[in-house]
Length: 463
Image 1: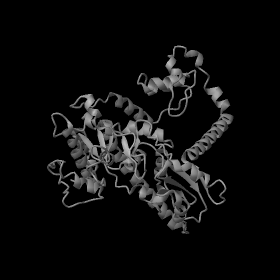
Image 2 (image 1 turned 90 degrees about the horizontal axis):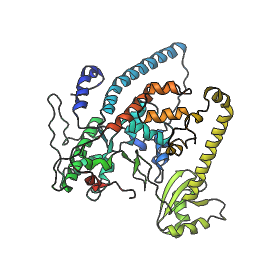
Image 3 (image 1 turned 180 degrees about the vertical axis):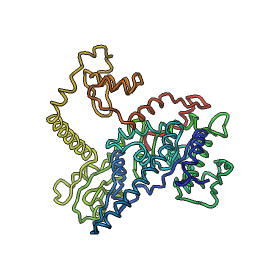
Image 4 (image 1 turned 30 degrees about the vertical axis):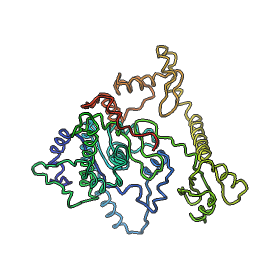
């Protein structure tokens, strides 16, 4: 059966039952992705960092249309707008129960090229996306402890050499052929099945369905490498753990995935140049400028700058020297470009922090006294602990002690609010996120193989 707005409430118990019985979940939001917009090159760059790509995906363009209406028409439009907003709110609140049930289950959630799906889900049903990528990673792993992207899985060994096209439709077809063994699907009574013979591509439910089929086929293929071979590999097997929480990054040349559980890959990029030039320049002008350096790749940043990758890194100093006396363009190494951007960011952050310190000292002094003398019992290693926001003070405050204890599950959120004189009451969303984080520590997926077997299929650090 199809569950839509009109029958959602009456069938919510069936949804809950399906969540409880499922081994894993496949999702698809049917978002057009980062190619949605006036220009793909305006939204993507082959040398985007994960932070830059996250910021681009998070940003939304807004268009305002101004028109003149009379008072009666204005009231009518306001009523329509209010009714629509109320309807959307009711729908969002209702469906959020399903998302929260999936999150609380701690089960594996699967998608294909799923970064945008995850971002939209977190934003719509938990809280607005944070400005910082590391905060987004922490929040996402609190909500969904285990994610798996089938596009990344298909792009990695042992699949990479035998799968030529990782688009969802082509992947589903390829996984029906040797050496793969597609699963046989029997639909429950009252739930007519999708038929892969009559493709219904780009319908969210169908795409989620074949994403699940692709995962089963690839997971079972991993079982053929065991001794003795296994024909079925469950969603809880350690064989698939190397693919957890790595989301495919589309159109990035040398960083294939966003790592939700640690630092992202840091490619050397010593063959890449950053070039600035007049707005009138076209791609042909850049090819002419670098014609002496053989094959090059151009990745536009905006109207006046681009990355140019050379085939031989030893040519980089020669190319940089050619622009020393040029008036219309400038060439610098990728390392110099990143270094200058980092300096600008640090200067901006320092300016912001200094401004804040000038405005806030009186409020801080009155509300939060120093508790450093009360913390002599802290272990030495807590003096050098770091977080994603910055370095910890040498003398941890009482508030910081509470935060550490809460993170480790030793005290509750309510107790923390009572011990921290600066703390504001925690929002329900943050409390749920912290609760989910503690739940994640208790999750111990059991597999049918030894720990050493899980190292058969490591997602590589360099591609």
